[in-house]
Length: 209
Image 1 (tube, rainbow, N blue to C red):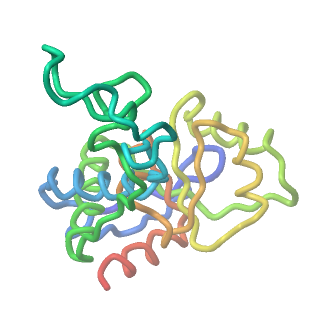
Image 2: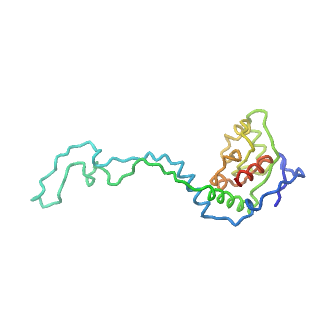
Image 3: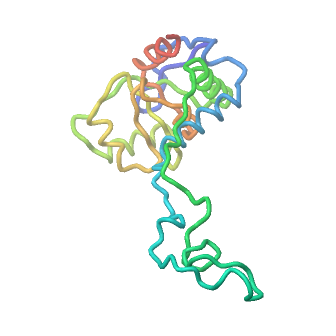
């Protein structure tokens, strides 16, 4: 399995990169993808939700009426959950939503997304590039040349590049990550995935560990 390397103008350079069939050519496992995306989204939750229970409400503890003889229900104090302003029954409490997945499943999830993206022709390899200074206009020009104007695009770099990252930061549908920062959520969320030439080999090696 091979992909042609493109230059920043969207033209073929004549070079090709070899893709590992065990990463880009497997039968996608949708449940593995679901679990890793769920784990990613769960980890984003703050978990700071909180409502007050009966014991935490400020109010009188006096019994509102006598136990028997009124002809109505038995009443406790004003903080009872059945009254307006009372405590909440089984309300939310602060908690950590994160959960663990084993590495093999996370690798399978990434391989599944990449294999599906490969089937959809949504993966390309781009020659390495750099900007002399952070310049959003230059990144817009790059997206336009590659046909990604108005599309979600994920650029995967072989190493951190401050100028490239800062140039893309103001573009809502463009994201730049290094090869070892990627999650299945990032891959699923991207419409187009662009590997820089130096990143594809490192990414494949990293996924085999």
